[in-house]
Length: 96
Image 1 (spheres, rainbow, N blue to C red):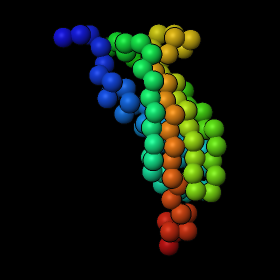
Image 2 (image 1 turned 60 degrees about the horizontal axis):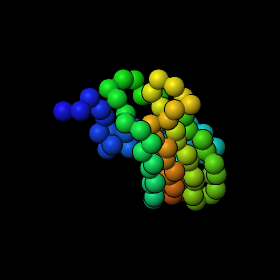
Image 3 (image 1 turned 135 degrees about the horizontal axis):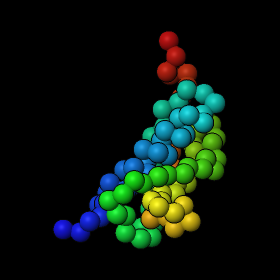
Image 4 (image 1 turned 180 degrees about the vertical axis):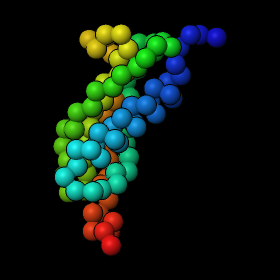
């Protein structure tokens, strides 16, 4: 056994971070749905605390683009980066 995190765990962590960041940054209550994810694994993710920094690149009426950088001990040495594209739900359909 390698003392490392599985790539799927890192991907799920980054997807969750991006989704929550987008929901917090939205100007309107929308439920984002992931359309496309591209992840670059840069180095082995060890069994230590992992952090993420998200950047909302664009939020339109129907689409949003978010980048995520995940690191462990040093933010300058990321373990992975990701680009995610979301379809945003219709805010009118969530109001009653």
